[in-house]
Image 1 (cartoon, rainbow, N blue to C red):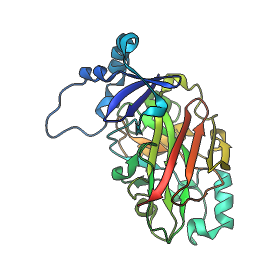
Image 2 (cartoon, rainbow, N blue to C red):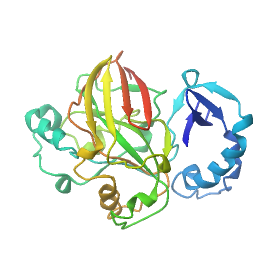
Image 3 (tube, rainbow, N blue to C red):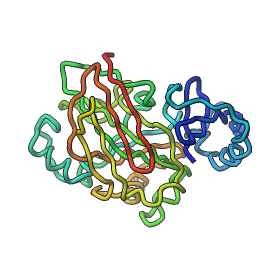
Image 4 (tube, helix red, strand yellow):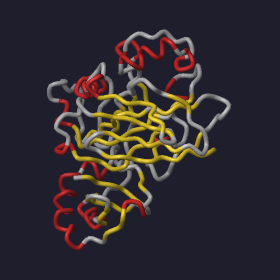
Length: 285
């Protein structure tokens, strides 16, 4: 299934170019009280929601995807995890272009570790990116986004995909500079997830997906997830060594070479094989 969140937090089932309004399926969610448990309630109960969706499809109101505002399909992740220098081609370009890393020694993801992006940076493609600190360089980074479906810790790479709810396209928007990654990558709107969540059963191999991004029609990044240094399973294993992963947690798996700046007025078109395409407008903050 392809599940989207759109407009005023409507839940949609994506079929072709249409979104069928299956918001009524959210009635299966359990009621919660303070303190609200960490994690995304919808993702934690995705199986029950999908069963309810099946019963609603035939009579669900329909809208064209082009007529709705697509939000992040995950509303409440407990954390957004980034994977730096996780494509060798990006490592190679970072060595050449000091504007990417600001004199930080380039080595290996095992030396740099992972980083966290603020949850307040999360938006969907329909929200767009509001570029901040325009005197600095603000780059696009297209990535496969992995959404965790079940709580887990100290997962083995061999079993890691069993804990995945689904996949989406991610944009790890980045202000270049000497500050720590978690600071300069956490501006409002700098984590774009969308255009929808593709459930894990629809992706046979997340480690062999074409991904690309163009800006104003010019292709900037064009690669395949088979070139990840740490593949999806290894990233989940690596992250779960330090963090308890919860339903709805998002792992941005890293970006290939071709990162580049965007400015207000630009339109980014990101796509990943078997997931879809999303257009994201850039504006001034």
